[in-house]
Length: 376
Image (cartoon, rainbow, N blue to C red; front, side, top):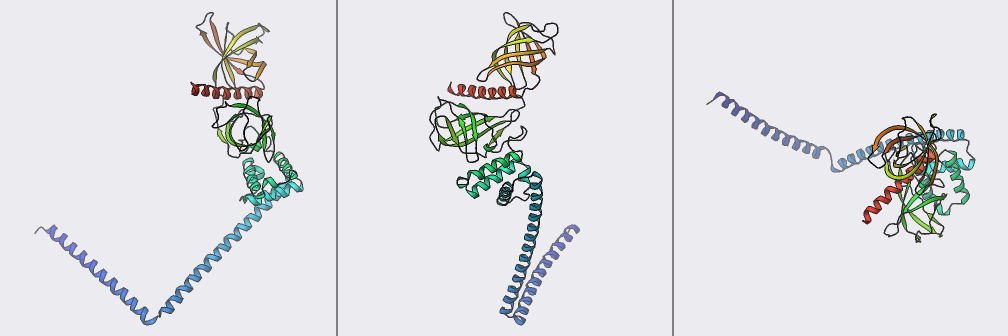
C-alpha cells in the first residue's frame, strides 16, 4: 500500500476515535454534574439561587438606570442654566422669557439654546408647543408675544440665505402661485396680506373661483436668491376679497441654479452712457433673460464694457426703468433683415428688486409654458 495512503487512513482513524472519546467524556461529565446536583442540592435551593441571581441582575440594572437618569438630569440642568444666561443677554420681557422656557420644556431638546440660535429649531419647537397648548384656545396677547419673540430673535424677516421652514416666516407682499387640485381653474397669482400665528391670508383675484372651506390648495413661492417653495395648505375662509389659510411647516424647497435663463421677446429702449455717445438711444429686443442679466439684439454694435440704461416692460410685473447694465459680450450678427447684433449684458448696482421681479416672472412663465404644453 502507498505510504501516504497509509498515513492518511491512520489520521482519519485517530480523528474518529478522538471525537468518539470526547463525546463519551462530555456525556459522562454531564451525568456526573447532574448526579452531584441531585445529591447535594434540592430543587428548592436551586430555584432560590436562580431567584437571587435574577434579583441581583435587576438591582444592578436599576442602579445603572438611576445613574443614567441622574447624569441626564445634570446635563439638562446645565443646559437650562446656559439657556437662562442666553435669555438674559437678549433682554427679553418676563412674559417672553416664560413663554420661551415653556416652549423649551415641551420640545425636550437636548440643547434648549438651539431654539434661540436657529430659526428652524424655533419653528419646530413652537409647533409642538401649539399642539400641546391648543393654539385655538390661546389668547391673542400670548400669540402677539410669540410674534414679537420671533422678531426679537432675528427670525422675522429671515435673511435671504436662511431657508423657510414654516409659512409663519413669510412676509406681507410675497408673491405666490395658487393651484386648486382636481379643479379646471387655472393657477392664480396672489400676494400674502397678513401673517398671524393662528393663520395667514392671501389676496384673491375677482376671476378666481370661490373656494370652499376645508379645501386643500397647492401653493408655490419663488424667493429671490434662494429657491422655490412648494407646499399644501387648507382654506379656512373665503371672504371674496381674501383667502384665510392654515399654516404649513412642510415646505418642499426646490433650489434652482443661481440664475435660470429663459427665452423671451420683449422690446427694449437702450440709452448709451459712453462718453462719446452719451445719451444716444437705440431700440432693440430682449431675447433671453435671467436674474443676473439678459441678451438683446441691437441694430449697431457696442463696445464691450459699455454702460447702458435699459427701459422695458416685464409682462405682469410692470415697467422697469433706467436699469443700469454693462456689456460683457458681443456675440455676432443675427441673419435678419436688417441684421441685428447680439449683446449680452450684466445688471449693475443694486439689483435685488429687479432680480426678484425677474425670478418670479421666470417661474410664472415656465409654469404657463408647461400648462400650455399639457393642454395641447
